[in-house]
Image (cartoon, rainbow, N blue to C red):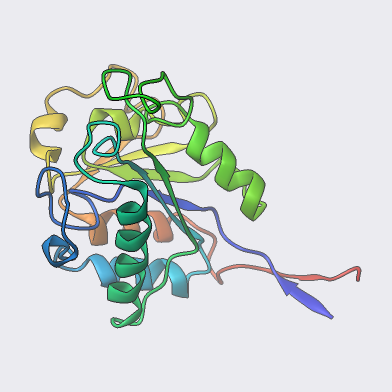
Length: 205
């Protein structure tokens, strides 16, 4: 028996990176994939790279949406991508914000830029943060997982053009790069991997 070794994970921000930024998304019909976003996810799928969405959803803490809607919006996102031949391996969300309403008004270790969602995904999916990529349109995105060996990639969609002017001093030292959109970022990330794609290893079972 053989098992396919997966490539390094792609951790993706949702709003402004994968779907259009609309403020606090509160209706499923507001959700629209950004141009070439499905293509980007499909490219990662074909390269054997796990794709995991990590998204702050403080609208829950602010009383604008509830956790049920967050679940439904995640399922809807998966359906939109699947209809375009792309798939997500998992979606992780954080509903907390310290200025929100109880019981969500906490300083949560999962709220980006804290690394909690990435750490949970690594445990759940047997991934390594070291060498993975974090792609988003905000400084809080590219700071997520700092110190874990994650390569930060900023996209100019959503709030990205403004964020580009506020990048931390060590962004480039951590391997950080800026791209026009998710498709460009994923193409570059895939291109950094060894020629021949994921390796096939013996399965001890």
